[in-house]
Amino acid sequence: MPAERTVMRQVREVLRLKFVGGVPIRAIARRIGIAASTVRATINRFQAAGLSWPLPADMTDAVLEAMLYADAGGKQGYRRQIEPDWSNIHRELKRKHVTLSLLWHEYIERNPQGYRYSRFCELYRSWEGRLSLTMRQTHVGGDKLFVDYAGDTVPVVIDRLTGETREAQIFVAVMGASNFTYVEATWTQGLADWIGAHTRAFAAIGGVPCLVVPDNAKVAIIKACLYEPQVNRTYAEMAAHYGTAVLPTRPRRPRDKAKVETAVLIIERWILARLRHQRFYSLAELNAAIGELLKRLNDERVIRRLGRTRRQLLEELDWPAIKPLPSEPYVFAEWRVRRVGIDYHVEVERHFYSVPFRFAPPSQYPRRPLLPLGDQPCLPIQPSTCFINSASRAWPKPSARSKHPRKPQRSLIPNGSLCCSIRRSVIAATGACLHACAMRGCAIKPQSRISTTAPRAVSIALYSKNSPQVTGSMCMRI
Image 1 (spheres, rainbow, N blue to C red):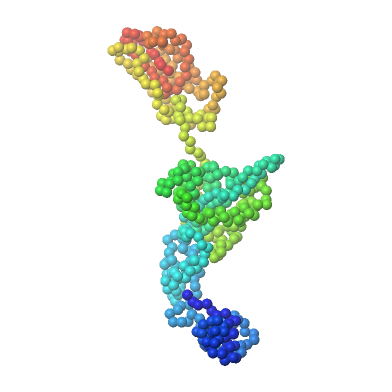
Image 2 (image 1 turned 180 degrees about the vertical axis):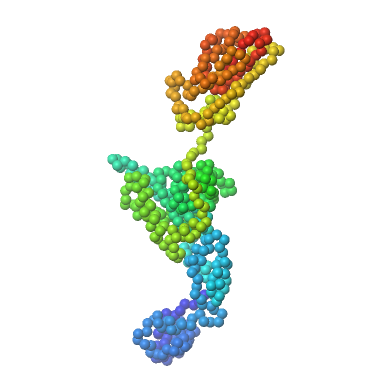
């Protein structure tokens, strides 16, 4: 490491004691408090520069220093070259597949007498060490988008008469390479607001990064795990729609997303602190105020030591590597587990939707002979025709006192022969038996029995005409 130069005040004192007082070199070193070799080197530089004592009255310290150290760095084996633009090299290293060796080869082609590779790397590491001290993470352009919610909230007046307020949550997303930041206020941190904020963040960036890095919040990660985290199904579907992937941080490791943690701190100081004296009466008004300050942060504020704004870095580093947006944005939808009823319908928010009948649960009633048949054969038959509209509109849930069925259903109507047909009637009368039935309890039932049922809830048994118990009759158990 090169030694520090002697200040010009001490240099003038050395020259005065030497040429005016004739003081020996060692005595000058003791009086001024510097090494004797430094005193000797200063006198030699003074004589080599062709100067004489007394110095001109108009010679400043800067001019004197330039004349004394004009040949600095001219020692054998020491190269003094114009240093490369380290900030540009730092930006280039964030591009995909770019290494320091490749940048040195490009540098040496432009400057054949420049620094050798070892000295080039040493000078770059020294310049990089003067950046802000953080956990070093190499971020490639278009690689990762870090997302999180800020800890601070902003109050929004929701009732002007009473002055009641509601806290708005602040969503923050930042690109890893360019530090381009997106901020949005939402009412909650729920799944709907979480997904909507992501879609608008992708639109603001102008593309989709390769990875999205959230923390292990329940809205994003159902089960946190170091090896196989379980991502929320809707969140994973949104990522698949945009062609990206979700890579959550390790549990209890906030430094894995240090980029967004720093962005949250900047947002709290740069945006939220400036809005502390303003009063907002709607979420749209708050987002409009945030958007104005966010534009200044991304487009006007220059990042120190890099000499570029966040918008410029986004265009230079991220845009060439990010994926294009899909033709249509993702439409939010929730996944719910519902049980299919025996009427092949499911209930969602007090509305009923029909589904294909094959998803209905199997019948809980086993088929068995309804009459003592003896040696006569029994032919069990089930309806073979079952047309179900899987895209029918929802039927509202009826009240408990309603006399109408929940939906139009189809009944099995005997047609006078040994078969059954499905009619499109809402309610149909089915006679218990066409003739007297030998089944226990069947003969006492009225002939005008009314029944409504779904196709899968019916078992039918037809018997031969030669049966000694029943001749030419049919029984149907609902």
